[in-house]
Length: 61
Image (cartoon, rainbow, N blue to C red):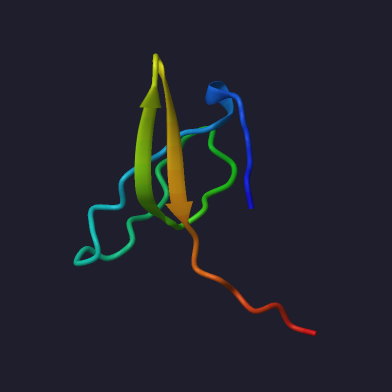
């Protein structure tokens, strides 16, 4: 899947690494969080293209 968003609609935060337990969400204005792994970062001028790996999730039927 491919997705394009405006830079002001997205923020990326580190979770501290696989050895650290998930931290509680900080009180801020972000409404949705997507746990994923950053796989690539490609800079294009003053912009960046970020590749993310999201674990698949089977949906109940």
